[in-house]
Length: 484
Image (cartoon, rainbow, N blue to C red; front, side, top):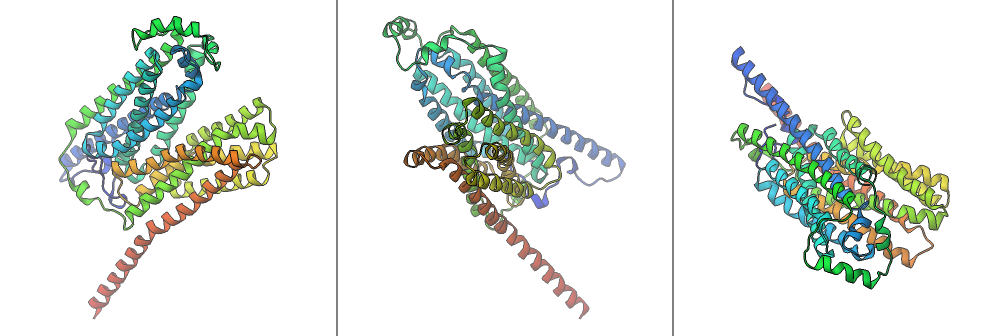
């Protein structure tokens, strides 16, 4: 595969070869040896680039997960209660959506590793600034900025993995998303165990504040928008993650310099890139596919705790364990998917994920009052949701060329699923408080993904079947004419 480092475009899956296999035909032993050395260098560079993307996604997972365990500390830092910081999540989601929308244009017109290095530097700066923010407005703006950077990084990582590995990238796509999950798992341990927690936040979680306290603090916050936080644990939690992200950016800039020095002018990949007959239809269907998949995942993980306590009657400790079971199987299967993807095709993994999701959500609806069924089905559902998103991206790359704009388009579908589904659940639950609405929505999401993938597979393979039939007919005609 000849990779255009600037645009990230690559030849179709059917015509692609691994980078280490590319090269001019050997003319004698010296040329063959030179070609082998060049192929080995390209192969090593590709592996270093992949490792850089894994490290990038590890930092991205840490960046996205740090807000939850430090929210009380941030509220204390700006002298507000947690409810007044609710706009933080809206701002982060809006920023992420904007970042994804601009990524398609940026990654198709700029050097991708350079742009990814710049975004990691910006992410590090944002993480450094968060604990110094002393007003709610500045804090929300900073978190929104980090959300936009996260959207660019998330989309760009998917684009680069596809550009580096082509149709052989399914295991690496799974490993990329596992790195993100690993970063999200490690962050609470780093924020609350490594640096400790603060006890001062409890005074700021109440619905009302002492006006005298606010008057005393106003003198410290009105003079400057930024100041050193009183809670040094909060400072070190963000600084440590920001420093890791900054180190990763240096590695990405090194990859940019190395690739730039080795870059050759080659437009064959861009000119030879072919699209499937139903390219735009496939992208729209994948948009909906990821919309329902991501929506079902965030819906179940967000509402399973309240559902278990109010509808099933579980204790809070047991309900918290149920939520941990979902994320535990989710993270474990993302790790195992790296191995499975080496010998299973992305389409096969999607089919098995759909089967697991259908069976688990169906039993959840049938036995919604059974704690035993809830435990088992939750674990199966979490495992089924783990591989669908990366497998969907790897699958479509086998049938049509994917650019930065295309990747940004269907990643927006997943982001909208995260935003829309929980809102719909909240509205429906108010109208039907006695029904397990969350289970119905999850079952409907899994059914939708199964139907959409069936349609996508049919559209993607139908032109290939006709093409093969046309080739066989042409060969038969040529053979007949030769005999005559």
